[in-house]
Image (cartoon, rainbow, N blue to C red):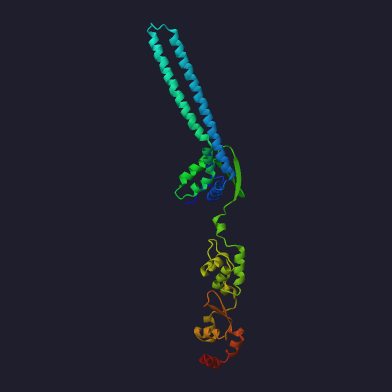
Amino acid sequence: MRPYYVCNEAVVRHAGKHCQWMRGAPVDDAVSALLLEPMAPAAIDVALAVQQEITQRVEQAAALRGTQLQRARYEAELARRRYLKVDPDRLVADALEADWKARLRDLDALQREHEHQNEADRSLLDEPAQKRIRALAADFPRIWNDERTGAVERKRMLGLLIEDVTLLVEEQVNIHIRWRGGRTQSLSVTRPRPMSVIRKTPAQVVALMNELLETANDQQIAARLNELGHRNWRGEPFTLKKVMLVRRTYGVKNRYERESGMLTGEEVAEQLGVCASTVHQLGRKGILKRHRYATNHRYLYEPADSNDRAHAFQPDAAHLSDLIARM
């Protein structure tokens, strides 16, 4: 199944027609080639944008943890002051002491978590981590082309790298890419031709066939077209059947149709009063002028009254019988 990209907005909103559509393969190939360019600027920018985003998030998380730690210290200090201000003999002192100790335990746990997280964050931003992030640009082609990577995984990877893609189908297909991180990029690809145009035989090939048909048959024309490097729309070499199909499609006359006044072997045999095999023997010996058409074993003959050699013996039946007897 071949993918297609279709704009359905007019259909969905206004029950209208598709405003634009195109086959998806050229777009997919162009975007994939852009992603797979070795050390492409876009890929490097994406890697750097990822690194910058990680740095910003680490800083935001550290600031938030710092605020929480400061709040815990304040609450622990406030609980200590409350405890110190109370008479130890009063019953409330035990509750305030328990609250103070709980605040200290929370502060200690938060402090340890803060230090542990800071250590982990530093490992994200150290030199080895930065090298790993930059290596994503070089590793991406290997992962993308891996046969084990399915279509769903490729879409997910695209979603991590590309924000969106806009297509404008005009004389060419204009592709506008918005990368994650804000960078934009545009490129164009040739608009796919309709299948009716793709399957159409080039005009120069049809003209060449028409020219060759003056002196050659379909099988000879197929061989000549292949010698000149011509191929059909599938990239296949020409054959007798393919040449015949092109002739019929474009209304090109074959030798039989364009040789006005020519006769078949049977017609000449009837004219001369002999069998068709005798006519073919006379043709092979050159007594009757013949012209090949269609395949290598089909011929048209010039009328006997325009053939000097045939005309010479046509009135004399005895001469004809004697000539045939010597064959």
